[in-house]
Length: 258
Image (cartoon, rainbow, N blue to C red):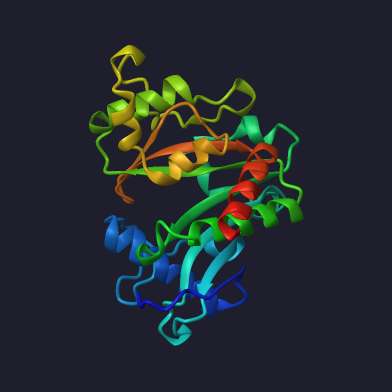
């Protein structure tokens, strides 16, 4: 990235070109950086995509200093699916991994988050705060009450992640009314070691920044992990009450802008 200060704008994808730019960023992060793959990944065009993309809203963070002709102007993405849209299209992406009945039967307005990523050149700065501010606005606009989605640890060996997974299990398990569960046949226990044996600081260092951010915003994890070998990850399902999250998000965003 150049030394020029980014000029951010934030909006939903409007056309196929916007979607391709989001898929290019996802390819850069998930495939090139993290080693993901899958039947819909287009390596020749460098696009990470799947069959769910046409039904989702895609929240884009754009640096106006970058050339849109190269598809590299989108530097942050959230993929969003509301429960009213999921009812129409038939399912959430996360349902491949988790039983979501406790949320779907709650009568509350849901929003699934997915494919969240920021270009490596913009991490650690304002980009994530701007993206979160846009997410908070979207949540308010659609009167969303519960946010959820899978978040990932790199790699597919749960035992190598025993400390962070166990810490999430012991300290951050969702209450029963929000506790989604990894699907039968794919359930990977997160209770891999007693709480007293966990090096808590080491476990938190081993936890991805996005998961820690959601926990700081009041998030919980569901029961059990899911090993996604195609995507080269161990997934946990995060669930958040939006009122608590919005207050914290707006505070952080206001502080960053100030």
